[in-house]
Length: 84
Image (cartoon, rainbow, N blue to C red; front, side, top):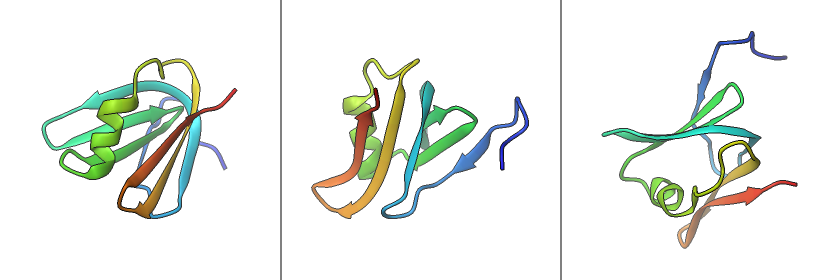
């Protein structure tokens, strides 16, 4: 199942869900922060622990394949990895 070109699907990860894809953008708004992976926009509330992780770790992601894994671990609510 794929998305038609140009259509972006907004996704909110549940605990232990992972999204993988080529990072096209990291966008910060007043109420949310999002990462565009291919045609998926992964969204987190601006004040969430996951958003704080994204603000600290998103350098150099544009154009690279990354994985975002949401956890239920308080010290590491979001794991981000570069995929080679």
